[in-house]
Amino acid sequence: MELEVVVIGGLHHNTLGVVRALGEAGVNKRNICVLLIGKDFNTNNFISKSKYLVSSNVNKVSTCEEIIPWLDSLSKDGNKRVIICCSDETAETVIANRDRLNQSYFTPEIRVNIHEFMSKENQAKVAVESGFNVPKGMVIKKDDYNNNWDTYPCIIKPISSIAGGKSDIRILHNKFDLESALKCISSEYVQIQEYIRKKIEYQLIGCSLDNGSIIIIPGYTDIIRQPHNTNTGYLKYSNIKELSYDSNAVDSFIKRIGYSGLFSLEFIRDNEGNDYFLEINMRNDGNAYCVTSAGVNLPYIWCYYQLHKTFPDNSSLSFNNPVFFIPDFSDVKRGIETVGLFMWIKQFLKAESHSVWNKKDMKPFWAQVCMYVKRALK
Image 1 (cartoon, rainbow, N blue to C red):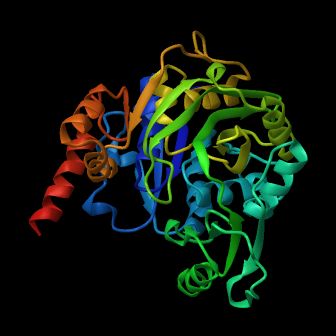
Image 2 (tube, rainbow, N blue to C red):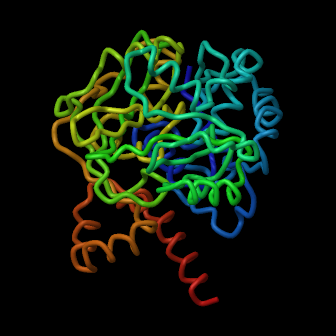
């Protein structure tokens, strides 16, 4: 059976990174189908410029409600494809409909209720049961807040990654800040959590096969220059052997939920060396192309394993040299303000992995450049 893949996500470098990973592994570009979720793609569809795609295989729908009908239509040709999700919304939609899709698709899966588990509160419960530390927290309906939180500084965030935007994530230093923030955020329910003064924030980017029977975590990210409300910043990706962490708790967590698919686990480490679980993303991570750049092609391993129940020939599951990843356009202003123009240019040129820039596949980068120039001229 020839490998065919559907990549589902937004107009984002995450989706592009998966396309490139598959293309670099030798997957026929006619067998890679992309479904973009959102609107206004015609103005800046840089993903369709990739040399690893046939433009006619790039499809668009406006909302996640349209994903399943679109997949039903695609499956009428009788070919069984592997699905890779690149956003929380698409992952929840696909996993929730796995029973409907599994005759025509290989999909990520989870053995607990996906809708309930997308809640950060429920993830935290499983994390504690698995042996992780979790920051003190509570979930409230913002309109019913009754002044019973007393730990500052604290951080508030939507109870799930799809319940509100990143702008709803805020660090607050006192009761007045908290009450003011609750009046402004869009999420109906929020999680209030103690703010841990971190030494580092890191991710474990990996792949789980057969509901946690096989867990591949080649390395970890150490965020060097972090943007506000996201961990997609200038970072270093290093071999997992260089990190002391509770691997037994990680294995227990993934096996408890019975997850199969690409994932990332997020942690912070305080100044005393204590690690705190933040969340799991049950999809390809926005930083995950750094893993491919290091020589471990997790998207291809996931897809190949679905068809053959073994790893690809000559596939690497580990690497030696660290990789620096830079999110090209989003890091320009922050990087120059932090280290200066010349040092930022040096970091850009020395980075082995980029969100959009790629010497082997430059058209998406130039499409982004043209878009920003047009915006500036307007």
